[in-house]
Image (cartoon, rainbow, N blue to C red):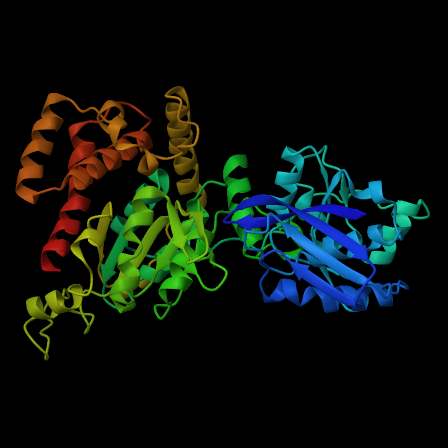
Length: 512
């Protein structure tokens, strides 16, 4: 007789059903696992054997065959340990055969029979709930699984013995409660930054519309400080965004204790990061920094110091909001709708734009052009705002802190985002929550300007040689500026300010 246990295999953030079939028969004493499993799956036989012995169950001196169906789907990871062990226990009569029928099972086994945490519990719980099943998962992952549904039946044992006792009726496992991550302290406040009023304005506009921002300035001007304070003026995640972000972090094993938070991700990889680290990849095609920054911010400090090939790999995800990682035997797609914020020096010397500075290596213009040559024009074209961040004078540093901090800016950003969410919901686009993510087909409808504004835009587009992408991004940026002013129509002043940011971007692209 064959014992069957349901589990899952992960393809991106999707959990595909897998049927674990265990057959115990007379013959040579052997423990075989088939079904296109990786090394972690093949090694599970030793973990299962030791865990069962530690739990007081000896494997019979028979031929044990475990099949992971469908057999042509790659199986990766250690989360198959628990379903295999439960299948063996059911096949030898240690637990009732029908006890596992209504559950999907996921978990790794320690050699002493303890059930260890695994990645991907939240997607597995969502898939189990959609299939009308309960979930058996490690105790440390129970709070994570509880977010899938209030009606989901969850068993979260600490060991095989606890689970066996539950099925026998001698011990009852209580349902875990959803966990919320404790706040990690307040974000750095914009009030800490003295001067840089134009850069603060650009930061507010970028936060209000989810626009990409590039800051260029001399070393020590405050570019990194500004970027680090962006999370303090971003609105919390909506429930749908929270679920999407948590599923990606669950697959990556980055949910500590199964606790979720509504803070937007802020990822800041070092400029030595490789392409798989940034866009995802590796042997098991894990999510990269751009997916871990989904619905949040990806901050790239010292932008020209990144490898050119790595930077250009961001161009497609910026437009599509997802990244496809192809391997010889499978292809996975991860969400990657992130806000790109970058900082850079104007040249290798760092002071080419400072008044009275003369570069010793080459004329200032040539030094700037050589440094910007590391960045491709198509990448620069994807920045909605490019701002110069000048050095702060000693007089500015000695002034008292500004009256307006992050709390006041956040209130305006939240009001502008609420207008955008309502606008796109009325258009039937519930998944669009900011102007930067609006489809190009709707840009002229939502950002229609008056005749004076259209003349300005037409003249500027010809003079700046805006691409079609640049044209639409100017309109989206102008729409955000109008939303910050209360959500009225886009006026000439909004287009003029949007074009001023775009003009800097096109000058940088020309230099590159």
